[in-house]
Length: 630
Image 1 (tube, rainbow, N blue to C red):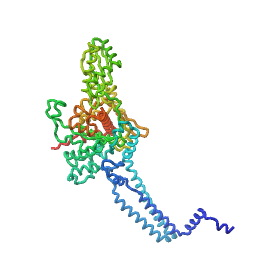
Image 2: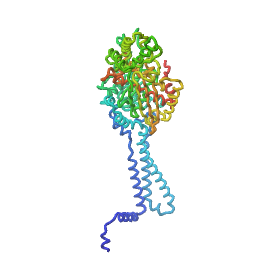
Image 3: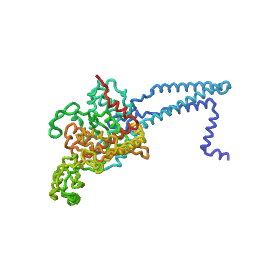
Image 4: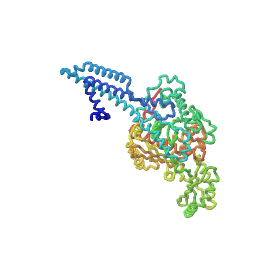
């Protein structure tokens, strides 16, 4: 039995028993030294695990325009702790801790076996407890330091994921074609948010010799986010600031436009100039000069899986800055999606018959498919691109208003549809000799006037655009909450507009953005009346994020003809990526309409946030007032 017992294999339990027996043989001093040493090693290891996300970001930010991951820049208005001081405090704490351990080990027998030393032992234990709490506290700071950037840019960190998911779930042919070979720009690292009081301050982290640098070097600093774009006037001077900003804008636009055109904005004048030969016979009569309007550039704005920049001509301070903040929030949330749901410019001639029964007969005749085919043939014989889509006759006594709906390609189409309407009238007069043309436009079109027919049946491009803004972006970029935005939108845009009897005006300030883009891109500014028809809706999602949409049934735009032929306006269209006729008829005009709608949604988002946070007046007092300098 003894031999058998000796040859039994050693088990894990037996090894543990032997290890415990060896520990029991250690003296109290040795055992305590082992425990303290293990604790010190553990603390050192834990304290060494912290790292800075900002360092990792800087190592990946070699390209100032396109980054693989969103970089989170620390706010220039928040003072950072002097971490080097804490480093020396840590060294001092570790040294004091080690000195106390050594002192205790050298006199352990005295402290442990003499009753009069019990008070000293308690002091040692209390001191070590404080040291350990301090060490573990800094380990917690290391963990929190890793999480801070995630909270400060919750949307920036999720924007890439949202952009990826959006691009996978919205693969229509138009989007796929337009998004190929185009880079997506990140949300603006700094934005003059206009309603955030902290944005009024000038950043202090700017090179002191910035005025001595060449324009190209300053532009590089802006592209690398080392100088804030909206601070250039304060850092340089207003004239040089425009020159530098044009350089940065040209480089940004070159990376998102086809053929990588390097100087898109060169034909947008920055000094007084106008080619009057292009104005004569096309845009204005009895010309005595021109009125210069400043043009701001909003963006990057992620729309239909591509990056766009939106030029806006305005004299209203804070408008461009506010719209830019909305564009930043939309892009941080993964971008907006827009769709054209109806496309057709209208003209409604007023004709008069001898009797009301004759007017009724004309209405019935026009609604017969074979008769409409005759009208369509006559209409389309006057144009290469125009296509008559529908004829909607409305009877009022002896009068008949023929609302003709025409697809006009990339032109806004008023001249096209008017010319075709005359051909339709001539065809009708052959069937109804008593028909008299009262007016080529009978006001049921309806052009440049608020009208329910445009609100319900549409005119030009009918667009719907939507986006989801994460709650973190609402808090950090828009400086408000999702609940406050939804509440403000309901009581202002919906209930308030209904109480006012508004027609198509269920929005905060759609006309502001529509008019500014129209002026910059050569559209008819008077058509902002119907083009600004818009209803803005907001909801809180199940995840607590903000869903926003703008429905605009009558955006009247074109990319050929009219003011689009002027060099400055053509440059702005080229900046958007829709100058001239598209590869397919109507492609560029449709893109411009979606850009107008998306920019409008950005403006709505920012203004409603300012109203919800009650910062609107302060913003306008800052950006819309000039000091009286003599």
